[in-house]
Length: 437
Image (spheres, rainbow, N blue to C red):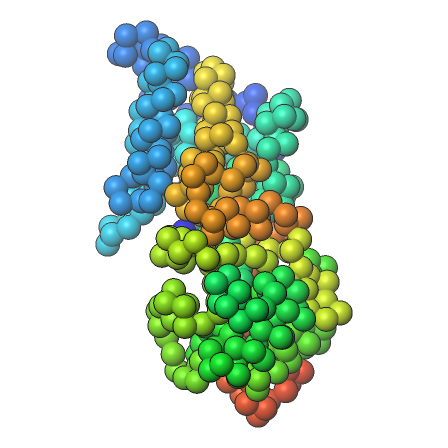
């Protein structure tokens, strides 16, 4: 679940999630011939020996990395709650025919969504909001502040529509600065927790013919994203292509001149830089959560937020992370009984979420480091827990054409001194203005 990069950051005006008060006490629109919530519950109990059926729809199935955890979690819940039968209607997201989207679209059209669903929150999520079939979580979260307090506020804010919480974030992606602790120790270097430490490391590694960063100037988005956040902080992160971003771009150009990147950085592929870092041929790599599983067997791998740049406003309290999907709770289930809400609270408890992030991804819920987690995964959880500002990558918030002006198209010219950072930023602003009309 990398960057579902055109996420619904604020489903009203941009892209990412959460939503609007559509009276939780009101009845959801009924499709022709559809049974009422009470009739459905009674029928469900009769067919399942007096148990209440709860229909749940997710993508935790097939080859999905979280599928085994999901199966274990719902089995344990039914064992502890013999009056409940969870009907798992999960469908895969992969494949030529996207069964996941197709099923949700059909259920919404029929007015019969599952009681509890995880679904996308970008453009795909807007029909769910507009359908009027799902509750606003605001009331429920006010009634149970202990539960609502488990969620990271920045994650909740990213899934609101007109200020209303129709969706709850759950599992997502993150980006950060990976480094090989063994290489830093070998050359008697302090870990890259400060900009000064990074500068010293670049110099020493270059002297020993080791790239400080496994990075490609053909695909420099991650490097740019984290550097800009380290410079601008949360305050300036959304001030798109402002001249205040220039020092971050200038630092990258300086690193290039110091020999911080591979000799073939202009052409090397993303796969090759990951392999280079994994094999210990580079000391650092700026990348995302999708790389963790391939690296965590090495006990020397660590992950941190990019340190603040000189005069910058970023640092360990600022992280690139996002949630492209979230939980939706049907009004019919809410009217029928409290059982679906109880299940949702169980699934979003720190203890259960801990099981999911032990496999991969980031969590929208504050939770301890997973038991038995690798040192790399532990460092990732610690990085996320320290952050008070979390936002999606810039290239998910602006037009691709504008971003390319400073990324794939612009970065090679920048680092070789053929274009200045201010020139690239000015060009990007013009493109952004043109593409926003």
